[in-house]
Structures are given as C-alpha cells and as structure tokens.
Image (spheres, rainbow, N blue to C red):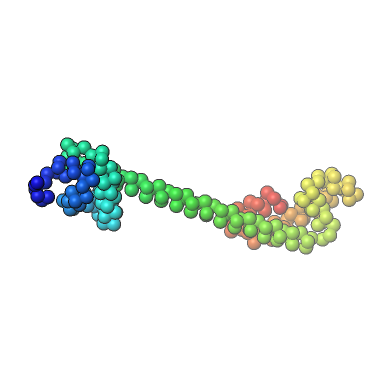
Length: 200
C-alpha cells in the first residue's frame, strides 16, 4: 500500500468517501493553509472569520463525504465550498445588522412615543392649571366651548348672555393661554402644534 504522504488527491477523496478519518486529516493538513489564505483575502483580512469558515468548510466536507466526486479537482472543490460559506456568512451578518437596526428603530419609536405621551399629559395638566386661573365666568365659557364643544350660540342661550359676550370671553381666554403656553413651549414645534390644534 502506498504511504500516506504519496497518496494522490483523487485517492484521498475516494478514501474520505468511505469514512477514512486519517485521509480526511491528511486533506486538512495539505489544504488548510491555501483555504485559510483564500478566505482571508475574501474577508479583507478578517482572521477570525477566516479561521471560523475554515473549520466549517472541513466539517461540511466530512458531513457530505459520501457525495464527493473523486474525479473533481480538490482545490476547485474546496474553493467553491469556501466561497459559498463566506458569502453565506456575509449575508448572515448583513441580515443580523439589519435586524438589530430594525429593533433599534422600533425601540426608538416606542421610546419617542412614550416621551410624547408624557409631554402631552404634562401639557394637558398645565393647560388645565391655566384655565383655572381664568375669571369664573370666562372659565365657564371657555370650558363649554373647548371641552364640551358647544357653539357660541348654544353657550349664549345656556348662560343667558349675548353671543358677543361669549366671543369676547373666548378671545380674552385664548390670548391669555396662548401667551403663557407659547413662552413655555416655543422651542418644541410638535408641542406648539398640539397647543394650537387641541387646546387653543
């Protein structure tokens, strides 16, 4: 029988197909340097990735040993598997980055949503505090208009006052609230928009 060091590549593949672990180890020793350098070049000198993929390549070869074509070039066979595993790793890492970015974006959106909700509640409390500072009659008219959504005509009829009085009271209340709130929230365009659309 030929000594192991003189065995040909084809013979190595044929023996690996039968489960010859010694020939598999011989293949590893002969080819690991070439495959490592090949992956290292593909990965832009990522030594950790090259070492990891190198191990996967030979594990894969052992797993599929029964399907090996012994007539195929060993180098071509190994380079093809190595390249495919490298591309799979790149895709996997890209997908992981995309997933992590998506999760981060969702986290930020949720965090911003909570912050806005807190800001809204604080604003609502501040508006109610300021409304309570209005003269009683003006406060009543403002609450009926903005919180009960009654028309000026309905308010006038309910309180037995003129529509002009209702309009004047609403105008004065709005000026008061707008003046205070615009100073407090002038730096936040979103909050200012809420004030205009919701409260004033």
